[in-house]
Amino acid sequence: MNLSHSAHFLPAGVRTGEVFARRNGQSATALDWLAEEVPVALVFNGISHAVMMATPADLEDFALGFALTEGLLLSQAELHGTEITETQEGIEVHLEVSSACEWRLKERRRTLAGRTGCGLCGTDSLSMVRQPPRSLPAASIHPEAISCAMSALRELQPRQQLTGATHAAALCGPNGAIELVREDVGRHNALDKLIGAALRQGAFSKDHFIAITSRASFEMVQKTARAGVPVLAAVSAPTGMAVDLAVESNMLLIGFARQGGMVAYSFPERLVTKATPPVQRQTAPSQPKSD
Image (tube, rainbow, N blue to C red; front, side, top):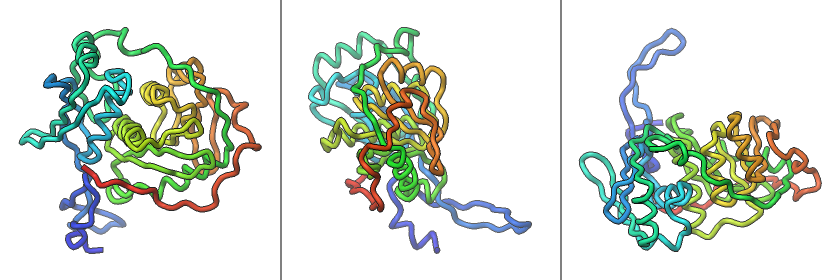
């Protein structure tokens, strides 16, 4: 494919760049696709709270998901408006929030200067790292539903297919059908974008689970729990702290979900064959226009 001619069809957050490639003993200069990564400042009522390196797409989703999973917003109702401003240095996302949220933000006195996908960079006290766990409802799932979702997710990541540099998070129905996907260069960012998008679209239900194309770190489990989702399936392994939090939160945590296999790190009895059978085919979920 001629990359220069396809530039107009690239998803937001992807551009072309010249590279020098050497393969099979042969060298050549070529065009390649690159994932964009920019500083994104989250500004609450004029107070700059966080600067994260992120893919410049779906930023309203990102802002809402980040604010909720970081405990800055207690509910979506506390967010009154969002405005995105591009600057020479990056992108500012201005959030108009309730006075209660503003007070909460000032109390925490937290400033982030995050590297790509950093979940806890800049937290100014250890007590802020681990918030009280949310107790989730017990949820059972068919193992094949997880396998089906993970298999389908590979085809629903246009940025990853082009660049090889992004992670994805997907909202999945009980039969493994993928309903919503978000991508980002940072795994935490992708999850925040997914959670924000699902909340904005009213897509969450008690039967959903989340699938991610990364390891299940502590922050990924905490963000999923705060969103109220009782099952998290990751393509790679969880950390010990993530497993502990999953148990405390009553979450079914699955790791190494790939090639039809998986490992249950909490509540393995909830992987049951009598659950809703998986779907046979997947189609791409609807994607709202990127920011």
